[in-house]
Amino acid sequence: MTTALIALDWGSTQLRAYRLGVRGEVLEARALPWGVAHLPDTGFEGAFAEAVDGWPPTPVIACGMVGSRNGWREAPYLDVPASTDALAASLLRLSTAQGRQLYIVPGLRDPARPDVMRGEETQIAGLLAREPGAVRESDIILPGTHSKWVRVRHGKVARLATAMTGELFHLLYQHSVLGASLPAPTTDEQAFRQGVLTARESGAAGVLSRIFLARTLMLDGELAPTSVADYLSGLLIGEEFRAALAAGWTKPQATLHIVGDEALVTRYQRAAETFDLHLLKAAGDTAAAGLWHLACLASLLPSHAMT
Image (cartoon, rainbow, N blue to C red; front, side):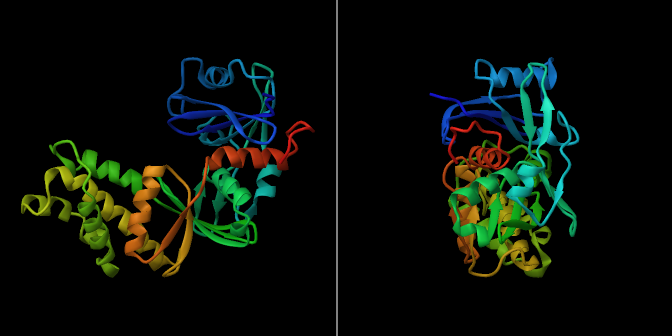
């Protein structure tokens, strides 16, 4: 099948490569361990060559940490409010050793906080391309190591905010007294919900006033050692929702879009119910869809390709 575009979602820990057809469909996908933080001895050029090996010499578009200060070439942030058209007009062009042309998507910066993101802006572009109803007005959650809360108004990202929920969980469970010498965790939905409720009920004091309960409940025999991970996860995700409501990132009883890993999205949906919020899961791979959409707007595609 005809290849119209090669798209790269190049983050800190992984490189995902997509060979896309003339309608943006994924013809082939590859996952490589060459994130920006861990490259082969041949560096960015070697990782890139491996990602596109054997694929036709079409234009290549990339998003994520590859365009960061520690990436292959820095693509300066665009300040919000910013539209997908503005992103497409600001692609950074790079000629590789193979003679291929690589176009890097810039990240977004909210100067009011300040706050930044790289990679998520492309997922948002994919969501908006697939969900026209979200273009005029929507709030979006992109959970992960650094969760992003994004407000879209009239087709532009108007505001963004970061919650370091995933990274905090890893640090606390792997490198603090809360997870010290515990057996392998097991799934405990009740413990997760208990953590979410504890965060909700922490009120103005916030989760810092309750986080040590992950240890004291275990010591008192009220929480199984194998359930500490789910309790702590619920506590931190619950705090993300509590803080988002307190800060005005969303409103009570709101419906939001959510983009991310399926298992993590499901976890966030369960937590959201406790706060009377409804999360709509985005369909498909929004990063690949967003890269295709931006390539279309930037006129990178052959004339026979269809948007």
